[in-house]
Length: 114
Length: 114
Image (cartoon, rainbow over all chains, first blue to last red; front, side, top):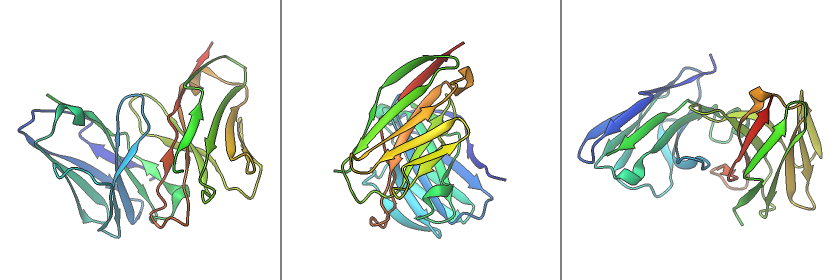
C-alpha cells in the first residue's frame, strides 16, 4: 500500500470557522509533511514531522496548527483563515526526513475560504 | 542561491514528439534532482530522479540529462502521448541542509495533442 489518504477532498469554510484536514498513511513512514499549493504554482513546504515531533515550521501563521497524533496520522487544524489561504493542501510522507527518493504525496484537500 | 529556474512555462507537443523541459540551479550543494508529474486534482508523483555523479538517467520514455558544470538538468519525454499531458516540476535538495527540503521549480504545463 503506497498511498497517502487525505480527507476531505474539498472543503469550504468561512473566516470564523474551525476545521481540520486529515492525512493517513500505512507505509510505516516516520516523516510526514504538509504542503500548500496555489493554482499554477509549485508546492510550498509548511510543516515537517519526524518521528511524531515537529521538525520544521516554515514560518507558517498560527491560524494553521499541525498535529501528529501517531506515526500514521497527521492533522492540520484551521482557524480564522483568510481568503488568501484558499489553496490545495497536500500531505506527504517518506520513510524518514532524509529519504528524498521515497516521498509520496496524497491527492490533497482543495480548500476555499469565503 | 536556493532557486531552481524552470522553463518553459508551457509546452505543446504533437503525439509522438519529444518534450523537453529545462531547469537551472545555483546552489552547488544540491545533490538530488527529482522530477515530479502532477495531474489535475492529484498530488505530485515522483517520475524520475538523478544524482550529480551521473550525466543521464533513463526510465522508459523519460530521460534526465544532467550537466554539472552548467548547473542545468532537463527532462526529455520521448514519443510523447496525450496521457503525458500534466504539469511537471523539477526540484532539488541538498543533504548538507539537514532539512533535506525540496526546492521546486515553477512548473511546466505540458499538452500533448493527439
